[in-house]
Image 1 (tube, rainbow, N blue to C red):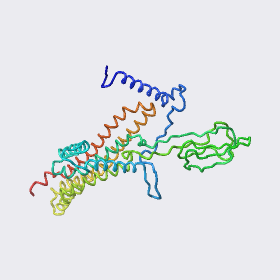
Image 2: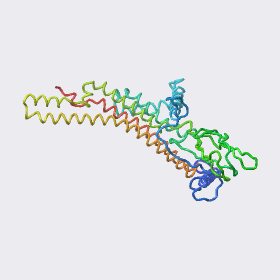
Image 3: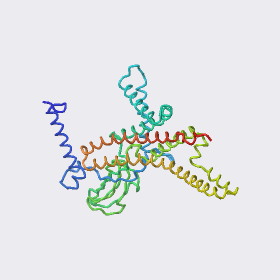
Image 4: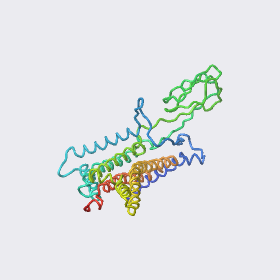
Length: 387
């Protein structure tokens, strides 16, 4: 017999493996630790501390220049996208292969979406920027689901270091806050029987010393704690600097297209419309007491509306940047929380959710850029009316 396209025996085996992983994960996760059911230490997930999640962690750098793990991830995204584009277009055929057909289908679907909103003429003008934003955001999101990527938030694993024997600290071998590697010596301890015990770092990372030279320690006393090193790759979408850069680029092109399409005079009037106010003041000096006040009031309203319009356009950058950053960071926290509570199995449904969220966020970012660009190049009705 077969069930769901596979044999009953295979299906039962898969279900048993999933159930076993779920039970082991439940025992070793935070829930199992809280229940204190006496599970072995090697099953326990580490205690995690989440902080400083607005930007990436510095991996290398000198002086004011630094390279963060989110920057490296963005470079990887660009390399992957270019590699796919090169592989798909290296040998273009009239009858496309699988990869060429897939890429052509994706490009045609995205172009149709852009043209359906902006029209054929403006759609083809907007397409390179909108498509670049969509592809960059969605590849950032999907690559972040790979195991080589760390969480989209700064996660610190605290590894406690304990003295195996009672004794006195004779020498501290590292300075406070110095980075250590796994196996590096941290202390020398005199146990009182002419035996010098050397305490090693169990993991690599940032060390925080609790014991000092001359301290007398009891057996199993905590002498230091070490924070694990940040991951080499972290999703670029979870770095506020990266999302703000995308937002600046999107807003720049929106304003550029609007300026080019509507002309300097008409476009700037949207932000600084002083014409009615100046006309009202002139009327006042000419003695038109009846009409001047209304013209001045209307002019003040126009100026105020221009200020509101400037603020509205400026807040687009904040809306762009924080919408993408917030949603992608929230997804990373959700994945991390699920894995922390019940490792392995618990996170699988949320990975499917993250695939959907990555597509939606890329579509929203590119779609808003497209909509606002279309609005920016639209000619107001009054500009078409004869003077």
